[in-house]
Image (tube, rainbow, N blue to C red; front, side, top):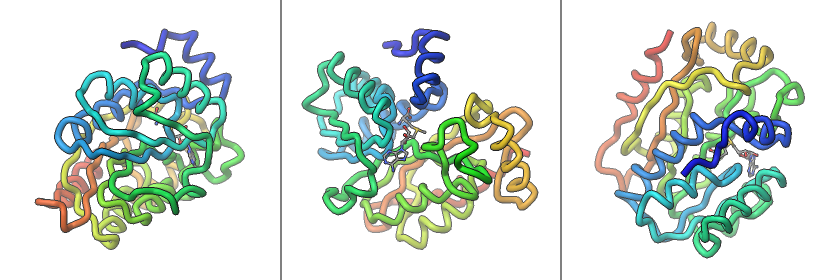
Length: 247
Ligand SMILES: C[S@@+](CC[C@H](N)C(=O)[O-])C[C@H]1O[C@@H](n2cnc3c(N)ncnc32)[C@H](O)[C@@H]1O
């Protein structure tokens, strides 16, 4: 399945201010397939920030996952695109997306499993960003930590090496999570993360030794966090070392 049809799809999505980064979305999709749908397979899953929906749809089509995914997407254009894609693939009884802020709905969640490719870009001024919905706070880790504070039993989330990852693993531990499993890949700096305002912020965070990247890119991990009572092992030390390996 190929939702992204080359440059014209990219230009349309980016002009519409809908997140478009196929490398990252495809990695998220692959992590969902391996960490959620094949081995773990809960009956109900909540998603923060569904974007255009294609990452989850592709993973659902590649597996026999039979659960229900309830997504929340704050950007109305992304949500409309997602709902179009869901209908196109006949998944409207298994993947539902509301155009609403995730945090405004937190009281109604069944807190079994949360999935997300969250906003994680740090920037001095959110309003300077190409897509302010991708703002992750001063060090990029604020939304990630907020999502780990809601108390889901399991969380599958992308964690980048540029956004204070060691503090994320420490915070997860404080909240009672182990890192049960993970996958890591290297991403090149893309359309959003190459923006000069973001690069300037990243250089300052790198000098403080809380952001790790090379001249060309950074690492991103798809992480399965599980509350300690459900986890068999904790691989957080191993992942912390890997995240610091790009200089
Ligand atoms: C990095 S993008 C990921 C999109 C998609 N999941 C993917 O991987 O292709 C993060 C998404 O979170 C959405 N978002 C940001 N803040 C949100 C909030 N408070 N509630 C719901 N969605 C939000 C953004 O609009 C954006 O579409």
